[in-house]
Image 1 (cartoon, rainbow, N blue to C red):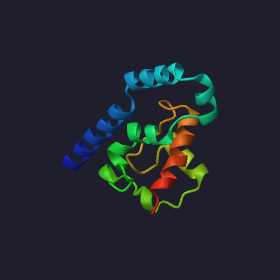
Image 2: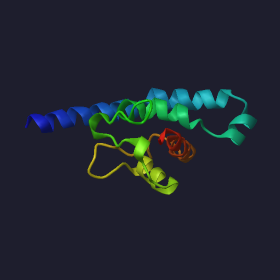
Image 3: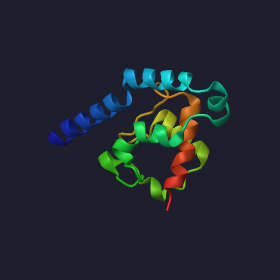
Image 4: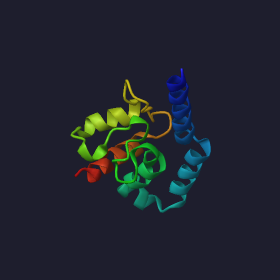
Length: 119
């Protein structure tokens, strides 16, 4: 019973941190205030997205493994697999999908960024 309650509290924390409406609004207003030509050619900053949404469980270097998070430094997933997990979450874990929080370019950017965390 205590384990289930603890897991529920952790899941609620993760969802609350990742689903903040103010962050999404602030993020979109920031991107609209930058030069449109730069934003269109460069796309979203994967590191920034990672630090905003993923660092809580995966850590700055991808190896924190909080709440059972996967160690990204040892990941062998393809880009398509990473995009699918960020989009839909990971079944059997506390990893939630971000399809309702992040748009496709941001999901792709963070999926590309985590490759830099591999050892």
